[in-house]
Image 1 (spheres, rainbow, N blue to C red):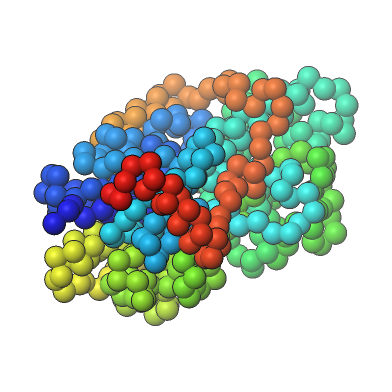
Image 2 (image 1 turned 45 degrees about the vertical axis):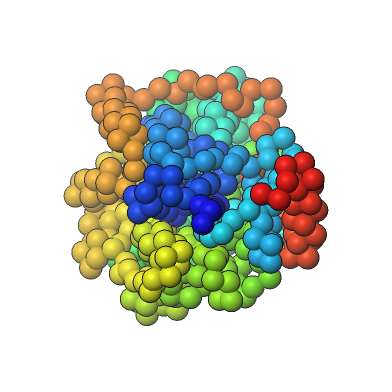
Length: 457
């Protein structure tokens, strides 16, 4: 019997951990294991705000797939369609070419993209904070605004360049606002004339920040943000964005040249190409993490609607904590499906949430225990150390934290934002996807071409 072809889509928490569990369970050479991903690294996204502030270097949160896997073959590119009839994934390579990848078992863990809304000017002017490139460019942009403001004698220009608006009161938005506010405080030591001009705003349509933490810690987070000098405005969103202004839904117009958009994540549009039921874009799966009606296709992570058998909510939350645990179960079930063994249901009880507000401020909910201050900081950073899958990355992160603690931070730019404005998050994360029918046509056409060139196999 030929070796089974196992394809994993996505190198995030779910995808990478699935590969590592598969490699532990499958003897070397017994299966062809392939990863479809646009990059050859797993991004440890919870620490991206610290990359944006310069506390961590970009390499610290980018874990090499080649270092962490031994039997996996990397297929570079974006998976843009799945033909479940012919068992083919359509991949758009970095060159723009389309290529078919055949599978016997498929694990979909493509994650999500920043959720965009039909707000005038948003796609042209907003900055994202979801990818490694966005984090590095965001830091350069913030520092360049302060440099330009310090060099300007026009009060209106100074106000526009020194005001920063973050949209989104959940984990990413709160940590990004806090981390970059600290960066501006360090920069203000070099630009004392800007101290009274720098303004940070955090806005969200929700009635509270960090609702995942509960009321007490959520209110504590709100107090900490305001004590840092961040103006928090709730039950408000953005109505319009221009190159030098942000208009809020309460009618307030803020002179501003930097809008950072962190208002949630949408599941990867790839899931819609399977022509199977979804929940708000998340592909429905059964408790064994299989797509109903497709015994050879599994899905986990942000883009999968996984039944939550251990909590009151209907589906598991789209968090790294759940994706990492789902990876172990899906790897076991993929092997069981090949060997025709009984499968295992996914169960996991939420362990809590940690939030690092930069400096010495942190909040943590560990099971039913709520922490703040230095105990929360110790728990937060200890959790990240346990969650980072690479010993090399852990060493880099610890070294970066130590260097900052003993020597302070640097505010020099790296030059990534020179020569013009970087792409908005919409352009940066955009990928063309095929619908169900065109996926089948494209997959069949590509397979016919491959058969002509290389034969049936």
